[in-house]
Length: 346
Ligand SMILES: [Zn+2]
Ligand SMILES: [Zn+2]
Image 1: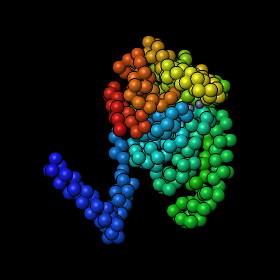
Image 2: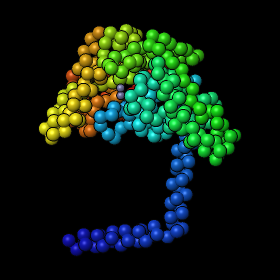
Image 3: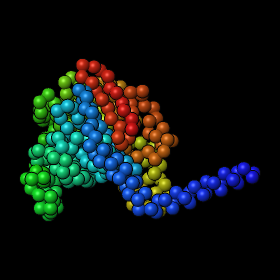
Image 4: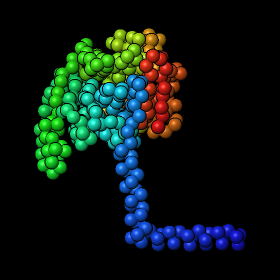
């Protein structure tokens, strides 16, 4: 007992001494220098890009739930970098992943719900500051021009301030202005050996809404955006390696709606119930496995974001072994001349 008392007294003395040291200017400056060096090193870190087709989850969430960024998927090869959607919180994840914003080629929008477009300008700003050599193009279904014009207009003064403050040499005004390109469902474009195909998704009453298939040197990934599973999903995933699909856990959402109703919050109860008809339930995605040849299915745009291990279990109920639940900062590597899919967890 006496020994314990001595140990506690020594610890207390050390704590008081350390607190005292932290008040000294010289000690604070040493800690500050070390901290800023770490930040600078992190900023200078260059993402090691392999020969593979790499898919990064920069946002795994839907508007329901917290703690993860909203929809964002990054497609990277040695020569390409496209983002699919940029919901709230996604730019922070892009920075944490160290994605090469200086060579961002475009942002592909699936549709114009806020959880998919919230950070368009943040992505534009981040890549402009990083030294992107061309204006950023935003691709999307018809209506993308209206979104891009509104963002350009709403942030015009921000661009003027930044170019004015840092100089035209560092931040040329012309590179801060977004460009737009409409990509209708059923059409595709090629960028070298990367092919991007838009397909019609089912997210009523939102029309048009699209998903994208990416093909690169024999490897392929489909990203659904928000959609139910239907024949289009089966067709577009024919021969694909990986499907990242919008996923809704019906038991969880139903329980949530009931809980809101029981506390008298009928508005939220109705909203939560409404979303069940335009996102793919995990049950429908598991049934899809019977008709599909896709090698791996990854649930993203999680409705809701599972807050703990039990809800994660509920989310994955009945899912086969080739199904995974994504989370922010997870990434998938699809090496060329291989059938392998390497899943990297944060
Ligand atoms: Zn959404
Ligand atoms: Zn949506």
